Image (cartoon, rainbow, N blue to C red; front, top):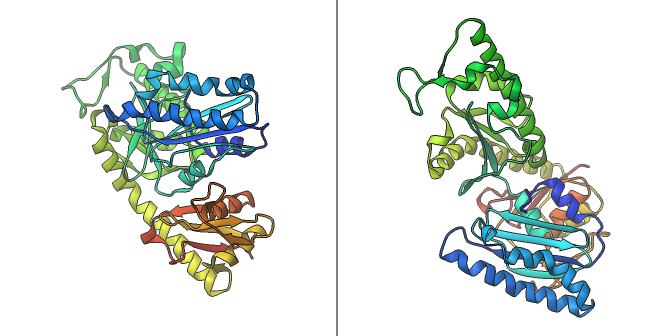
Length: 384
């Protein structure tokens, strides 16, 4: 029932849909007993959706629209597998459930389009990455950031073992692998068979790695755009990198089978590998902004950036992760109007601006306050 949040899934939600469009957001909890309150809060938000729907729609249609929400509310397996935030969006012919790795503000909205800004901000936030755990006996994929790392349930069709990938084409010796000279995470598997049999097994491994590389690129790396960190025993790194066509694969990797590490240790090691690339990228964005601003090709003035965004001039806008500026943005002209964020019809101008920049073909990046190159909450570089 869960859907992986990608740029493609966001594009699906922001396309035109037959109203009404139902959007429900709430923070959730990973563990007992805190997670016991989550389905209760969800049902309370369902009541808000129902109340809004009944103002304009008959009871039968309201019940039909809420049916998948109600089914989710009564699914005990789902509520024992949540993360830190939940987004459920549904309407005529569409129902999507996203579990995200950070809390979201509680909200229930019935409108002519889906409320997607919390999902967009999550995708725009820098510092996220994926880890591919690679061995001949098990494939794992993880996603996270500095603070959290979670295993991803692999999609149907993604091979999880060499047997899954090669099936009947697998050489027989792979069925009888033993670890000579000891067992455990540090041991190197030695295979029965000599000469030609070893060549067959090496060929099997190469074909397996090619299949994994292709599946991860198509199903995960390309849709997410996240850097990919390889975690595998040292002997597997050279061959996998040799056959890989994944442009998101990082040059650095973890020389260990992640299956032997507690999740917290894996996250710490992964972040140590990812952090230098992350910091270089943030510095490059900041330097790019300062250089552009010095040539009148950049600005940190909200009104100026909004007008440039509406004209399609913004190439990149950096947004402070900890700032909110209440107001309304006219996407046609770029004019902004101050307002009170407590008004349910008023959004954060920075979120609206990021959405507009992306719609006009630019890039929006949400960054920590300490790495922002300005004090105004945003910094934009222009195309011209």
